[in-house]
Length: 360
Image 1 (cartoon, helix red, strand yellow):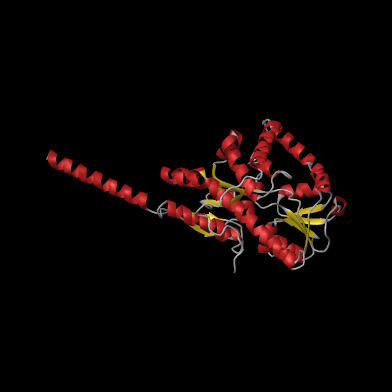
Image 2: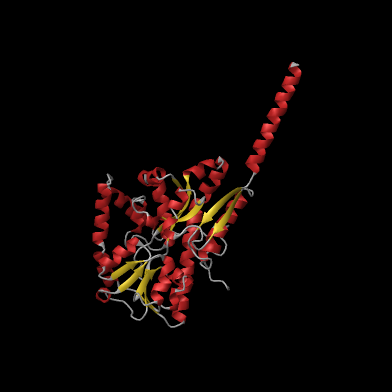
């Protein structure tokens, strides 16, 4: 009788082991959201490429089901939607949640970054070197696995080239980013905050004289149908993250977590490089069609930077009110931004096209 008991126990253990192995082998499907439209180069060159690489590195155990163009989460929902379980994975616009991410948002401040690759490298270092930045994600129940900002916010106008500060006075400028709203207020314009998806219609209806937007998405959002006078001082960049909830993250096996972690810096750099490359050829196309692209003189840009100093000072004061060492954190972020400025990265072997122009 005892022998039969041992045999039954052994068989039960084998069944449990087999079921466990089957569960481990089962695909993990991540419902993944981004507000970027399908025609944006980030869609194919970063998001789909990243998903395919994760699938490859996990031997098919992780798969992404993408919902593009805000079909699952609109821009303001990209953080909250992950926290609430509406999506498993999101290309999250952190800049819509400055109260949740006050440390990360330092990189959104005016004239902190040179471009999107610079921002991805700076943010990755900040996350790993500044404990307060990691803590704000932990408190929110969120796990970032890569960082990148938008390409630099630039100015597109319908009919007037802006090369002097005085020309901005009272100008009706549309912006999709809260920090850009503050910047244009400081510069004397009359900005209005609108969702990225609504900028095209607002310009079409002549609700504004121009818009601040990165150059590449000006093309993919079809804003270049109406804008033809561009000024490129690089006002600021708006931080994003590849984001999961900690609940989703903790459900992943450790070896799969390691895949996401190992590829994180490279993934952010891919997104940043995609935006840099796309922006370069979009600018070339705009010049070819006869548009005006202006850059500020060094002296003139210094005037614009000086006008934005109160924004930085106010942000430091805000951090102090939250109980942080505002000046200390700002200086750490500024030092990291300076150290990563001009730093090369990639291309890594898995990147693919990375924003270079292709026939569509």
